Image (cartoon, rainbow over all chains, first blue to last red; front, side, top):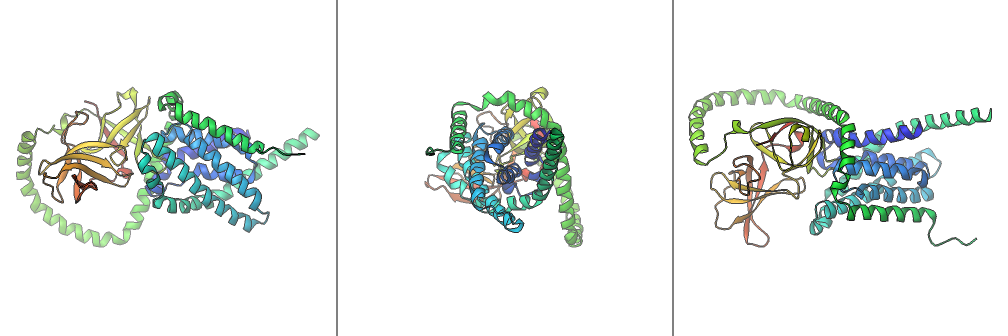
Length: 179
Length: 268
C-alpha cells in the first residue's frame, strides 16, 4: 500500500510538472516537484530505500520530457547520492535547524540536477556540444533553486504528515504481529 | 575489519550510473516509444484536466492583477475604438488589395488548409520552453513533420514525435528548430532558428538583401516541409552575424507560445 502510494505520488508529480506548473510559473523556471520529493525522502530515509523511487521518478520524467531514457534517472540518482551524503553529515534533530539544512540541500541539489540534465540534454537530445556549457550557466541556474525552494516550502509539511501516517500504520502492523 | 575502497552505496551508484549511460548512448529514443505511449495513455486524462485547471487559475490571476489598470485601459480602448471605426473603412480596401497580393505572392489561402484542432495538454517539464504536447496523435491522422499553427495562420512549430493520442510539437523557439523564412515586404530569404526558448533569430540572410525593422516574416515554403505564407513574426532588430558573412534579424513572435490553449495541425 505504501509503495503504491509513493509510486502514485511520483506519477502525479511528473504529470503536474508537465501539465500544471508550466502555466503557473514562468516558463524557464518550472519547479522540479518530482526532484523535491526525492530530495525530501532521501534526506529522511536511507539511500537504498529511496533508490527505487529515484529511478522510477527519473524514468517517468524522461518519458514525459521526451528525453533519451537515462538522463533524468542518472540525475535523480546522483542527487539522491549527494543529498544522502550531505544529510548524514549535517542533518540535526532540531526542527528549525533541520529545515534550514534542508533548504541548503534543496538549493544545492537543484543546481546539481540543473547542470546534469542541462548538459546531457544538450549533448544527447539536441546534439549541441558547443552550446551546452554556455546554455547551462544562464540565469536559470540562479533562479530555478529559488522556485524549487518555494515549492519545497509548500510540499514539506504535507509530506511530513504523510510520513507520520505511514509510520503510525507501520507501528499498528508491528503491534498486530506481536499480538 | 578492513573496509573496501568502495562502500556498497558508492558501488550501487556507479552501477546505476553506468547502466544509465549505456541506455543514453546505445538506445535511440524510438526503443522506449511503446513505454512512452503507455505512459501518455495513462497520463492523458490527468494531463488534460491539470492543463485546463492551471490555465483557468493563470487566467484568473492575470484578471485579478489587471483590475487596477482596467479603467485607464477602458478609456484607451474607447479612443482606439473610434480610431478603429475609421480604419475599418480603409481595411475594406486593404482586403481587396490583400487578395490580389496573396494571389501574386502565390500564398495558400488559409481556408484551404485541412486543419486538425487540438488542445495543448503539456509543456516541457524541464522548463526549457522548447516544446508542447498536444492531445492528438496517430489515431487522428497526425504525422511527424506536420506544421502546427494557431487559427489565423501563425506558425507555432512542427510535430516531432507522434503517439497514439498525443504528439510532441517542437516550437519555433526550440534551439534545434530551423524554418525557411522570408521577409514579406522585401523578399529577403533566411533561416528562422530558436534561441533556447527565448526568442527567434532569422539567420543566413545575404548581405545584399534588404531588411527593415518592422517587416513581417513568413515561411518561404523552400524545402517543401512547410507551406508558404505562414506568419512567424515581425523583425525587431537587424545585425550582422558574428562571422560577418550574413545578416541576422531578431524576430518578435506574434504569439506567446507558452500561453496557447488550442492549436491546429495542418494535415495536407
